[in-house]
Length: 583
Image (cartoon, rainbow, N blue to C red; front, side, top):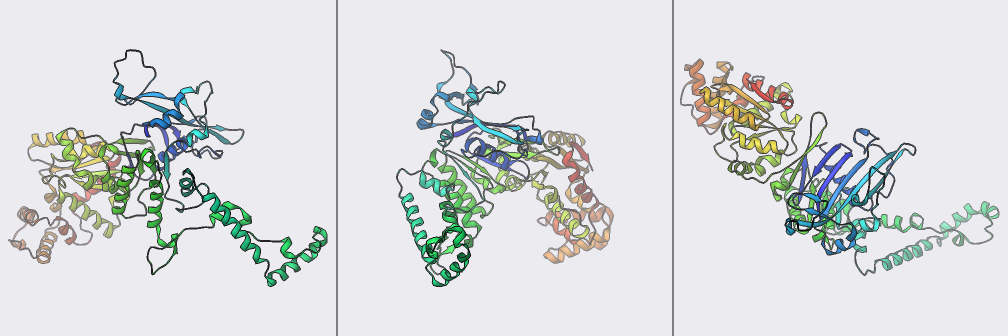
């Protein structure tokens, strides 16, 4: 089974959103973008437990607008013979090429039969009842329902239980024997099981042991004293305390007894068995995921995981993500850890964003078709995925630009208390990181990839002395990025780094660098001044393998190159801007 389409209306932070996944789904985005809300929306439609109880709060309604109905529609395809039989008279046709529902297929249609498949549609709806101060919620078949006429053909609970779908939560304790736990569901899914008999023996054994407690003479004496004044009013007669009072765990309730049974594990012989909680969060997270994989129908199932990888290291996270993909018919994996995306294709990525005015959007990765797009794809694992939760990215021409801005930002933070760009979820990308050369012409490729994934893109470019070339570069970058910050004409990062600094500060920093890195300057800074000093300093920084960031660190306290400071001040302001910012 696979989810072909999901539409969400008026649910939590989503006013309206639609997704048509191609295959597996890697759900990424920053805090507040709606990853967990989208997973919850899937649970509302597909889980037989979602409408079991009344919805008592109005927080699920978008903007708490109770006049509008919550609607979450899902189209399920790749059903297989069993599900097609179960939903036989509820099936509809779906065009895989166009991703559209076919209302009617006329005789002699020229549609390719291979592009058509049987699907079933479900829709979760919730309506607020102002009299009862709660919401009525249900799941219906849209095919047979008429929302305008207030007629809804509800999906029987037993049919929803037929759906091969597993929701994996990072909360809770794995291997729970509770009636609604994943472990019990796995046991109950088997054709024949001796588990009920084992439970009966457990209850009988506990009852027998508990009964023996009141045989204790010390306990019996105390109970006799407690019951003595109550014998006449309660009509207890002369029966012994053990005939009147016994003890049972949690009142003898099976559910309560099972809740009290927690798994213990022995991973090392010398440690023996320890409670699962003592083994740490990593093992608990691994067992939660393994329970989903243990389903006998996992190869036909949709597996939905929220907050994946929160408590496990990235190597294990990638390993488990790849196993989940191979085992599931379709995997929906929500995570804040962008590096997990190395197991997915770009077209599997769905990045959720939220604008400054609170509007949520979904951005789906596109299959690269042009040479420029294929070149930009080299940056995906190296730079885009690590920054996947950022709101904005600053794309610079090369590694020296990035190192200067990063070092200056840290210096401002430590010496003047200026917040780092990361405080506003801004990340720096280097157009030359995956392509070698970088430069102003490489920025548009990377900027386009980032922008298509929903980042607010800020490009920082040099300004060529050739006015015609500079204008052409500006046009190309403005087309790819949201904002372009441009250095003054004739400036690159080296000149911006040195411009406006006191000459003595430049000399001191150069000498310190030469001594610290054992690199001869090749000139005497004390004999140079003004333009000649700046020119030789620029050549030294360029020819020494990149001493740009160490030069920033070598400057005196509270000394930041003025142009670099101005650039860093413009970056946070550019988040809500478009167009050119000329320094």
